[in-house]
Amino acid sequence: MYLSRGGYEVAVLDGFQKRRWEAQIGVQPLAPIHPLQERVRIWKRETGKNIRVFVGDLAHERFTARVFEQWKPDAIIHYGEQPSAPFSMMGNEKAVETQVNNVAGNLNVLFAMKRSVPTAHLIKLGTMGEYGTPNIDIEEGWLDIEHKGRKDRVLMPKKPGSFYHLSKVHDSHNCEFVCRVWNLRITDLNQGVVYGIETDETQIHEELNTSFHYDEVFGTALNRFCVQAAAGLPITPYGSGGQKRGFLNIRDTIQCVELALSNPPLSGEFRVFNQFTEVFSIRELASTVAAAAKEIGVTAKVEHIINPRIEEEEHYYNPVLTHLPSLGLKPHKLSDTLVKSMLSYIKRHSDRIDPDTIAPRVKWEGYV
Ligand SMILES: NC(=O)c1ccc[n+]([C@@H]2O[C@H](COP(=O)([O-])OP(=O)(O)OC[C@H]3O[C@@H](n4cnc5c(N)ncnc54)[C@H](O)[C@@H]3O)[C@@H](O)[C@H]2O)c1
Image (tube, rainbow, N blue to C red; front, side):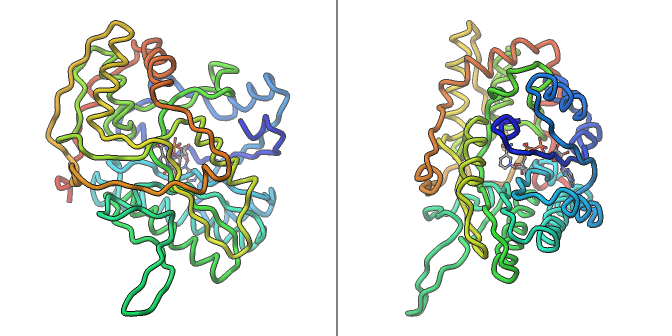
């Protein structure tokens, strides 16, 4: 919507896999999401701008190839993957489904680019979770190393924490490979956890809202904490809460995509941007949400619970962030969004909160 409003000719491709996965596990976004075609009609009515819709599965090679041949995009922003770590850890079937959907879908995009639009720019959504929590600084994709007196530049080693994050690592390797051998141009956005609900475009009409999940599978820790506080439930960080992650506002994700789009890499270049604006530990998030809840008259307790994941709870975390700020990224702050936007949105929809979907059931070692 942001790019369409800004004068780009935009098509959107979706196979509604997310709606199927939500139905499979029995969860829903806090506010309903209307059918895509209806949203596109509202967009046209409100702004006069057309967005072309393609419905199908990226993992189907012929469908993806046909769309690229028909639409011939100058740039592709590839969001279309299974985005949940717990979903990918629900067992053999879901791990395979995640990796086939993500890795095969991305491969089909790469082949379709090579065939139909070899000079187009692919902006691929990766994640900061690909790196895990190494005991060294996290460089932006590449690492200069010296080993036994020789030097090279290699992809930053990855230590991801779920089959979902592994699918993103596999994507990154496939992307780097096709830049090297087919001369494609790709920006891999290693994105942190996105928060926030509203953008200037979603505010044009209520039915243009983004999907806000707060359940244990598709909701992020911050979303769960905000919903717990708004519903008068205890805020429940996993384990000691010392896990640190990079975060960014949804408005900043849009800025980052546009910065990448208007500053494309050269042909043959695999460019990696770390994409976050602030780092918080999970316990800092919990206390920040509790303090924000107080501002709207709600007292929220923080109760640490057993961590269902296998991850480091106290660790070094120092991701490098230089490329996007040097291109002009102007970050928003979590503290400016929490009360004004997130908690008040949740309060407005609080009759739809299903508290039974918040507690963690998916355990990293519990499924075979
Ligand atoms: N939300 C975050 O905090 C976050 C953080 C880092 C990275 N990312 C990445 O950003 C991207 C978007 O994340 P999101 O949270 O908006 O997820 P989302 O689930 O809301 O959006 C992904 C969309 O892609 C579609 N899709 C999935 N597989 C597809 C396929 N094979 N063919 C066609 N469409 C398909 C889904 O139906 C869904 O509408 C994902 O790649 C995710 O891994 C998200």
